[in-house]
Length: 306
Image 1 (cartoon, rainbow, N blue to C red):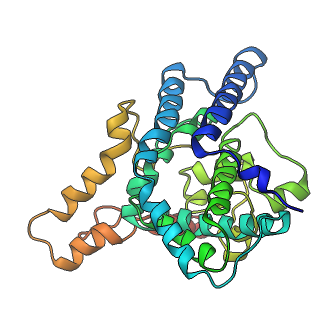
Image 2: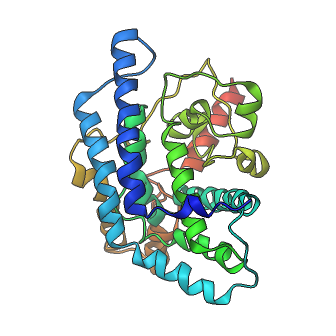
C-alpha cells in the first residue's frame, strides 16, 4: 500500500495545518481545568510564554535545519537499500526512528551539553499541554540529530524519516497533561502516556532519569529505565535546582552560560573542564553538586535504612 500522499506537505504547510489544532487542544485543557475542576494547574502568564516559545521554535529551528537536512540528504548517497513509500516501510521507519529518539532523549539527560538543550523543556514546575510547547531553539546544535543518519543509510528516504520525527513529536505533545490519569492497561504497557510522561518530568529522586520514551514504551522496558507512576508519591515537577523565572532568554540559554562559566573556572584541570562539558548534569570537580545518579543513590540508601 503506497503512502506517497502523506508526504505531499512541506514542514511549513504542516506547521500552518497542525499548530492551530495544538493550540486549540491546550485551550480546551485550560478551560476544562477551570470550569470542570479537572486535575491540573493553570498559569496564564506561563501558558502564554510556553505557547509562544513553541510557535517561535519552528522558524528559529527552521533557520538552522540545513545542518540536519544536509547530513540526512548527504547520507542518502550511501544507502545500501531503498525502501519504497509503503505503509509497512513507514511503520518500520517510525519504530526505528522512535528508538533514535529514545537514545537522543537519554543522552540529553546524561550529557551536560545535551542537557543545555533539553533543560528548557524541563524547567516548568507545572504539567500541562502548554508545557509540551516549551521547546528549545538549539535543536540542530546538540549533535544528537545525527542519530537519524543510520536510518537513511539502511534505506529510508530522509523525507520519510522527517515525517516520522514530526508525528512522534506531536504525539508526545499530547502526553503533557494531568487531566488524564490512566489509559487502558494494554495501552499503558505499549505506549508512552500522560502517566508515564509525568514521571519523566518529575524531580522526585524516585522518578529521576526514567521514561525516556517518545511513543513506544518498549525501549524503557527493554533498557531498564521504566518507572511507573506511584499514586502514593505525587510527581513534583521542575528542575532539581529550581528555576521559576519567566524570562525566555534565561529559560533558553541559562544552562549554556553555566557550562561556559564552569569550563572557564580558574584552577581546575583539563579533565575537569572536559567533564563540565561532557559529564552528566550536576557533576562538579569538588563534589559540591550532585548528579541524578548520586541523588537516586542517596534516596535508595535512605529507603533501605528505614
